[in-house]
Each structure stands twice: as structure tokens, then as C-alpha cells.
Amino acid sequence: MRIFLSGVRKLRRRLATFVTFGLLAGLLVLILVATGATSNATGGGPGAAAARRALLTFPAAYDSVVAFIVGLGGLLAVVYGAAVAGSEWTWGTLKNAIARGESRTRYIVGTFASVATVTIIGLLVTFAIGIGAAYVGANLAGISTSGVNDAETLGKLPERLARMAFAVTEEGALGFAIATLFRSQLAGIGVGIAAYFGEQFAGIFLEDITKWLPFDAATAVLGNPGEIAGGGGGVQVAALEPNTALVVVAAWLIGAIVVSAVFTERAEITG
Image (tube, rainbow, N blue to C red; front, side):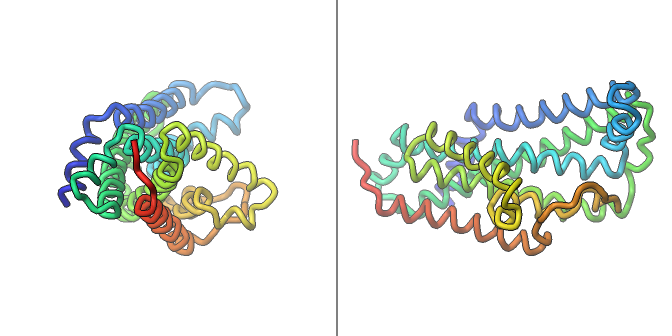
């Protein structure tokens, strides 16, 4: 608990925390407000205009914000997890902790727990900002916001947010594990980003395989887009059933933490 609380205190002051979640929130606000301001533009034809308006129409806008956070937030979580884990090696923090007699496994698990906690808080704050931006965008577009109080949607929202947080935390755990294996922030970030986009590219040809991989599984945790508002449609691709995806994501999450802990226990820490 002491390591966890100390980690949270450190992370709430780190520049990486503000940059990661500030960037995510800023992009979300920019997209939603810009969409509202241009919703009636003729570019792209009537279909594009309808899609822009649908993005801001409540209650579906709740799901739009959640989907955006999982999509872009997953990549940023990989970078954030790698940045924190890599700094433990490059800054000598881990070495100093071990010299004080800390358990390596306890230190790694406690550090990741603090990363996960700060990530979840950051995601929830970003979601609140995103909903505010969607509301502003809807007003700019002249779209009714009466659905913002839809009881069925609000009833499902806590589960959706929990799934969102769980999925993004798993992606952060992967970045954390990669940086731990490479003992480097830069290597962890680079390899993590490469793995993220590599999986997306491989999914074009091997979707039956990639659906079991961490990033596709994290996306599948949400189920069908628009499900929260009873929507649907669009191109169907191979994806895990949402509850199956939860189990797969949990396996990747636990696996990443175990790999990080085992590697740290056996690593020779010098310098």
C-alpha cells in the first residue's frame, strides 16, 4: 500500500500524466466541437453530414465518446505505461528501492497499480470533458440534447465506463511490460507503438487470429458501436463476443504484470 500511494503521489505531478490525458481530452474536444461547427457543411455529401450529426446526438453520443477513448486512449496508455516503467530503470528509481530492501515483485506490482489508478481517473475525467464537448457540439449544430437524460442509457453507462477503463488499463499494462523487458522508456514506447499498429495492419489479413490479440480484444470489450443506445449497423468484422473479450483482456493484463514481475526478480540491476 505504501508503494502504491507513493506511486500515485509521484504520477499526479509528472508531466507525462498531464501530457497523456491532456492530449486525449484536447483531441476529443477538438473533434466534437469541430464536428458540431461543421455538421451542416455539404462536404462529403448527405451521408457524411448525417454521420457527423449522429456523432453528437444523445444518447448515442455517450457511446461515441467511450469508443473514441478506447480507440485513441489505448495507444496513449501504451505510451504512458512504457514511460513510467522505463523511467524506473533509466532514472535508477528501482535500483534505489531495492537497495532499501523493497521486494522487487511488490515494487513492480505496486507501481503498476498506481499507473492503473491514475489511468482510470484520467479516463473518467476525459469522459466527462468529452460529454461536455459533445453537448456543446450538439448545440452548435442545432441538434436536440433531450436524449442526454435517457434513463436506459444512463443505466448502462457505469458498465460501459468500467469496460472502457479495463480495456485501456490492459493496453497500458502492455506498454509497462515492454518497457520493463527493454529497461528503457524509448524502447518501450517505440516497441509498444509498433505492436499497436502492427496488430491493426495484421488484422486486415488475419482477423481471425488478431481478434485474440490484446488491442483487438480491448476494442471488442465494448461490443457493437451504438449498442448503448440500441443502434448498430456498419461493416461487420471478426471480433470476440464482449464477455469473452473481457476474459482475454484479463489474461493479457495479468500476463503483462506477471512477466514484468518475473523479469524484474531475475534481472541483474547494476550501475
